[in-house]
Every structure is written in C-alpha cells, then in structure tokens.
Amino acid sequence: MRMVPSDATLVRRVRDGDTEAFRLLVDRHHDDALRYATHLLGDPADAEDAVQETFVRAYRYLGRYREQDRFRGWLWRILINRCRTLASERARRPQPQALDTLAQQADPASPDVDLDRRLLRAELASALQTLPTEQREAVLLHFADGLSYPQMAAATGAGVSALKMRVHRACERLRNLLTPLPNSATSKTSSDDQTSKDRDHA
Amino acid sequence: MRDHATEALPPDLLDALRAPVPVPDRDRRLDDIMRAVRTTRPEPRRGLAWAWPPSLHRLRRGVLAPAASAIVAFAFLLLAGTEAISAVFSTHAGLVGRLEVLGDTVVARAANPPATAAAARPLAPTPLRDTVVATLYDTLRIVRLALRAPQAVQVVLAGAIDSIAAVPRVVTEGRTADGRWELRALIPREVALSSLALLVDGVRTVPLRFVGRTNDASVHTERPHTPRPRVADSTR
Image (cartoon, rainbow over all chains, first blue to last red; front, side, top):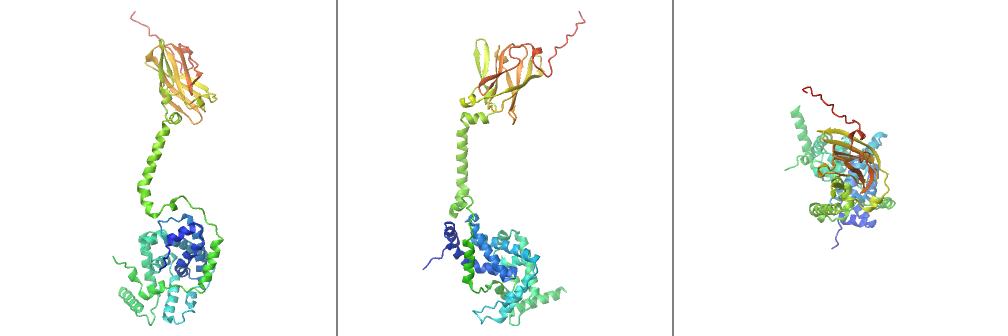
C-alpha cells in the first residue's frame, strides 16, 4: 500500500528544493480552493486567477509558513485575501454577466447530472452573489469548507461571535431568496416552514 | 452542543454548496499553475522556527527558552566580572577609591584603575570649572568639579589632605552624553589641601585650580564665600 505524504511532508520537501512536490499540494487543494473562489467571486475566470495567484504566493512565501499551523488554513488565509482583493477590484469595474456562468458550467463528462441539482446550484450561485462579501465568505467557509468558527476566525481575522452572526444572517437571506425546487422535498419543507413562520410573524 | 447554524440550511443546499466546481481540462490548469510557480523565486526562510519539529515546540517553549535565558545571564555575569565591563556598568567603582597613608597625609586613589589600553588612550580633558556651591556649618563646603573628557571611562577625585576625616568625599557624580563629567565633593573648609586632582582613567591629568590653596577667597567660586560679619559685642 502506498503511503500518501502529508501536507507537512510535502512542504518540507518543497523547502528542500523539490519544486515538483508543490504540484501534489496544488493537486490536493486546487478543487476546494476553486470552489470557494468561484462561489465567492461568482466568476469562474476571476476564480481561476485567484486560485493561481494563491498558489504562486503560497510558493513564494512558504518560508513564512510555520509547521505548527495547518497548511490548508494558511493557504486559505492567502486565498481569502486574494479573493477580497479581486472582489474589491471588480467592484470598481463594470460587472460582467457572471451570475449565470455557474449554471452554464454543465459538466460535459457527466451528462446525467440531475437537472434540478444544476438549477439549484445556479440559483444558489445567484443568491450567494446578493450577499455581502463578508457574509458570503462566512457561509462558504463554514458550510462548504467545513471550517469551525475558531478556524474561520483564524483565517479571516474576524471574531467568532461576529462570524456566527454573519452565518446566521446569510442563512436567513439564502432561505428567503431560494425558491424551492419542485423535486426538492427538503427545501420545499424548509421553505414552507419559513413561509409559515413569516406569516406567523406578520 | 449542536450548531444551530448548520441546521439553518436544508441538506440539498448544503450539498450544492459542497459540490465541487467542474474543472474542465484540470491537468492543463494545474500545469499552468506550476509553470507560474516555477518562474517564482521563493522568499528566504524567516528565522529558524521551521527547523523545529512540531513535537519539540512545547519543549522549546517550556524548557529550552528558560535554559537559554539562564545561559545568557550566566555569560553576562562572567563578562561583568571583567574590568572593562565593570568600568562601564559600575558608576561608583572609580569614585570609591582607596586611601593611602603617606606619612601624615591620606591620598585617595582609584581602586580599580582601568585597563592600560584605556589609560594610554590620548585624552584631552578640559576642566570646565570648580566652584563652591554651598557651605555647610562653616566647616564643609560642597565643591562642584566639572571637566570635559569625552573618551574617559573613569574620573576620580583624589587628593592628599592632612587628616583622615578630611578626605574629600564625593557626594554625587554623573556623566552627560557629550562627555562632560561632574562631581560634587564635600571638602573641609579649614584643612590645608596639599594636593587635589582629578584622575582621568587612572592618570592624574587635571590638577584642580585651587590645589595648594587654603584660602577660600582664592577659590574660583560662583558664590564666593564671604566671611561672616563680626557682631560687635555691645556688652563690652
């Protein structure tokens, strides 16, 4: 059985001059980084740029990485900062038609992907873009990347209570924005519950 | 404890959030990233933190850091025992001096003359002034002695006077950043000073202006001592 080298082992090899070991790190974290950047920025081209820039910066500043930290958390700090920079740059230039690009990204390799699921992803991508950046960041880190609140705090620099509030507000907004799909019983039930709650409040 | 936020999104939304983004031609993208990486020059490592295996971090913080501090402190104490360091750090070492009895006179000398190299250094001390700044009880006067000797590491007031009790006693001393030395000494008024001088780095180079003079009136003073007017005895 072949042993899979840990991130720390690969980092040590890269520091010792083995540049190709960095490819294994890129291969390991690329997809998650791209998912985060795509959801956060809403534009696959921008997301690709952000991810590439993140890995280049990680390689350049690998000397600053301390081994008691998780490599993934350290990498995510770079990614978050890069995405923030790109988001602020993008806010200053005209917005491309990016909201539906995720929906158009049908995977040609798996044509039998459920249409409802693809539609849900498209709606989710659109709904995410309506969130403030910090709420989007929080909900992605918590739900998509599975970071705990202390890990999120370390990655974003925000406090735990602030992050909880951002996640809470983002969830409320997403629930309100996303219309239930016909075949999605769970989301329909959840939405019905929310609607009835709203009615009760009214 | 259950995380309420996790329950706030329905499972299909969570699945949609966690679903990987399709990456067409993934290998080509990774090649592009690696091409950019290869043209990047890594920044040199910062410090030696990377060299410690994670298992030794606690040891380094808990045991090794205090041990290193103790070694540094011990080395400092060893260095402080040498003359060079003590001359720099001990402000009163040169002023205490030692007393030598020569016949019926007592001579104050520097207890620890600095190293020969320092003594041989060319010095250009310039006496600034020696003044009587106060008179105490008609028997003592506080004399302020100042000179400029930027390169000196030790300035001592030394003198020979005619009784042990009258040895000049330095009460304050200090050195400014521009090389100005200032001492205040208690000197008996009535004694005859046979010699009084400043030893700069162990060498008697600055004879004081009132050396050999016993008359207060001849001392350079800012507030010359004026003899107390005699009160006429009206009862006579």
